[in-house]
Image 1 (cartoon, rainbow, N blue to C red):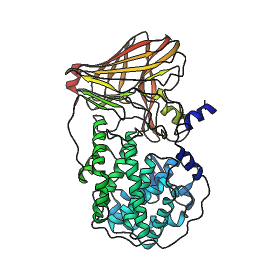
Image 2: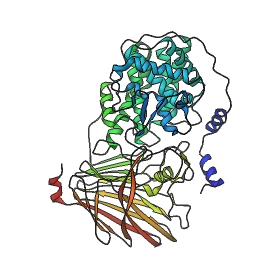
Image 3: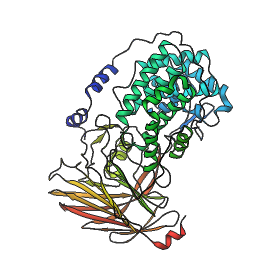
Image 4: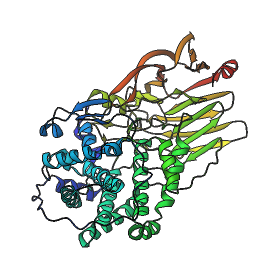
Length: 557
């Protein structure tokens, strides 16, 4: 239930300049005044080696984003209120200019630029909001440079878009949006020449320089702690490095002074380290496949841009600043979320997933969080951000963080430092959080994960006092089959034939229910969820053990 205190617990974390910028953001602005664009600057080489988008995005006037297709047949369709806001954002990004078949349809794509300009008046509608505006500016310029395309009609509009962006920087939101704004200004200020363009470029470089120092943590992770947004920001940075290679005489020195290649290397390393054995991102905070380029695509793009990476592995890797522990002993691989919900002043992509984990056996996922299928406000968004949608412990039917609306967080947990160790045969990681401290008896959840070549042991401790209800949640991948053997004992079978015995010990009752898993945006499937339930006086200790049947290891790839 949202109360005045919920609002207070949310807004008290905002920065003063963020609140001031939000007030300015809602004030009406003077209309943009048309004027001639700055002259073009000729690149030394094409913007090559970019990440081409695969799959069907645009076919004629039919567009497919977020697993949903729509026709854009009339001017009103660009901003139709009945269409999901994130879908409209994707439409205005013009991401499909990077589609793999783009070289075959340059004239047709150019006609769509013409149509967008005619049907989206300056400063009006979704397409002129700063985030889709930033994405579109970059995609247009990459298309112009790559194909030596574009007309004066396009360049006039591009200059207007940059002028609008310059006065619409998203200081009211901060976070990854500011990096997107900065990258667009750098692209615009490099593509165009002259005094006005130089001002755009300098402003973008200054903003990017300050924000990467704010947003990229010492362990290489992005501070919003969403692997999906980390990937989007990494592509932005690699795009800027690519632009500096196309305009080496304009950007190379600034990029070197900023140390942008070193930052890209840290981010690339972080992404490699935190991925599951199947090569994809884990489902922590807002995360879904198909929104950002895949880790494999970003890895290849980083190589093409000359960004090095360390390939050394170990059984235990702790990313202390972002709060992740990766514990890997074949055949098991565990990714353990011990981080805060995100930056206090911008936790918009946070879930109440503290101390959740994802477990793989070989390259197959066994335990996995529920992912993200929508940003639209409502029951689905609320549930996907809740503790109950994640592999962790829920107390008294509440979430460990007070997630509300689509992108708001009120009360949020304090989280301890990640502890961990390895003795040559076993690796372990441990952490605690106090997200339930507001309840009577101030419960604190502490979890320890121990991994050997034979088993994974999950030990949950809830300290405190008083009468409480606790639930341990283990959402399984949708490909997993479950057979209940006896009280608190289950036989799990993976799609490839691996058999995993799951047993729970403690004063609890376990059961299997059907849950939901977000395969992608606007696309969910049923999957099994195993839960233990307890009601009594704190403290409580429950252990859950996963053991692979040895004979099944030989049957699976």
